Image (cartoon, rainbow, N blue to C red; front, side, top):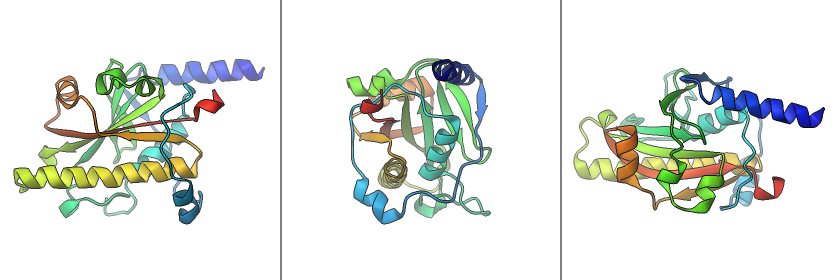
Length: 208
């Protein structure tokens, strides 16, 4: 019966991930590991189980990364001049989505597996989820080119650290990557900006 339940859950997840958009459950914004404990466990791992995360985990992960945490629309991660320019793309094996923090949903942007496009590392193809942090220049009006480069990189770093802390607090593995195929990603996703970092997230390989 347990084996059947796992297979059914995987089937339902795969079905959801082929939808044009996925409404995420409300993120859990209370509880979790104390900050100092999460920092003491923060680490990088390059081996992942292929087990999928639940939609609740994905919702919580994205909210921690750069979700809305106040009624005025401001975020869990800071940004220069409150530009909120870091877009988070979420890559699964069957499709790629853009995180909409206002509606708390994923909007499909590609039916391709963009994980191997992002990086040629084997672990990047194994992780069930890869996040891509893009500095959206359409949201950076009034920034000159050097400021777009500097603040886009800085603000993406804040988002990545939030992901690290979420993973640390929830016993998940993660690794951030700066060596990514930026031109290929821009061609595939058609954004006006720069892909700054990619970050894999999943269960530890020992839980396979």
